[in-house]
Length: 150
Image 1 (cartoon, rainbow, N blue to C red):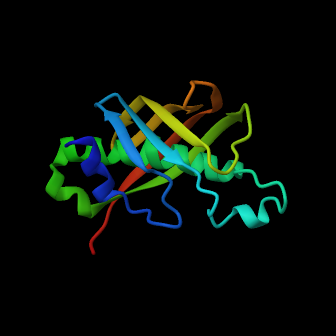
Image 2 (tube, rainbow, N blue to C red):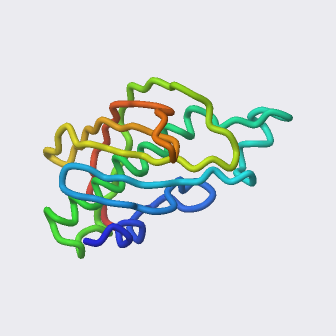
C-alpha cells in the first residue's frame, strides 16, 4: 500500500484529524507530518491571548500517525487492503515526555518505530520533532485493532 493511500482509511476527520501527510512507511516504521493551523478549534480556549497546543492533542497526533496509520498499513499487509474497512484501531495506553511547546502555525514531524505487533496490538516508540529536528515530545504508545461489522 502506498503511503498516501493510508489516509483514505484513517477514520479521524476534521476537526479531529491531525495528519496532513504520510512521508514514509515500512513494516517497522512510519513518518508523517502535520501543521497546527491558527484556526484549530482548541486555540481560543487554550490559552486566550497566548495559544499553545494542548499536550493531549500532541499525543493524539502521535497516536494517529504512529499507531493508527502504522496499524492500517500492517493490517493491510496481513489481511489485504480489502479487509481494512472491517478494522478499527483504538489507542490504548501512553507514556510521554514533553520537551517544548508547540504554537499555532508550527509543523511537526512524527516518527514511529514499532516495538511489537501481535494479535492486532501495536506498540511503538514515537518522537515528535520540529522541521529542523528538535525534539518536541517522545512517547511509547499502544493501540489495539478491533474487527467490527458495519
